[in-house]
Length: 265
Ligand code: MLY
Image 1 (tube, rainbow, N blue to C red):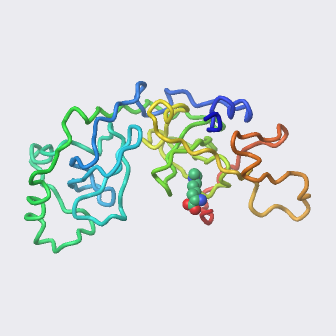
Image 2: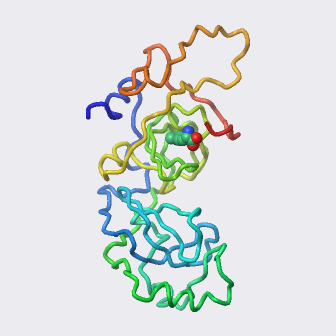
């Protein structure tokens, strides 16, 4: 204890400000997670968004569920908030006159799907309707501003939620930059993405929050003329925890318009 990442200290050290709650498509009071591991539900197939499949809750973290589509392999698990419109109680699909579909990459012959469906649902524990919370409305417009801080899902490691900074805003989109990771994990997304959370969300929902990386976010290929001693290279140990950056070194120089992906660290 006392060695964990502290937003309060970090905001002071970086002289930065959190994006206000009104920027986010997240409920003001985070929803409770009333699911249990093993429960089944209906979920939109993330790889084929027109089909509704059966999913099993494989894990819980804060207000999120780790889901696996029944009949799929164990390498395509995905995460959804308990108030995501992508999930619903079993029976919803049929009630709407639709049919449950096998997941993309169903591991058996398509002809065995009807029997597989019967078997997977037989005796299964179904998530109760009360566990599904109403998805919050989207804010009317994109009110993010470059430089504001937030918590965001690392889309390359979606079980992680990490401190991030708005790098740029363009129409309905924003560029999410992960603090201390030199751009390798940054992405553009819509302002109403469910992967973005206000500062304090993880703490409020008991979800782990990754500390910032140790990179100062310097451009990868620095001009040969720039003195290597002008910016001290900090070891992870010297930076974390708690994070202490030299006051003169900006933690995150704003890199405009970086869209290209760099190799994963
Ligand atoms: N370096 C690890 C995990 C990186 C996580 C980065 N996030 C926190 C922005 C990897 O190689 O995937």
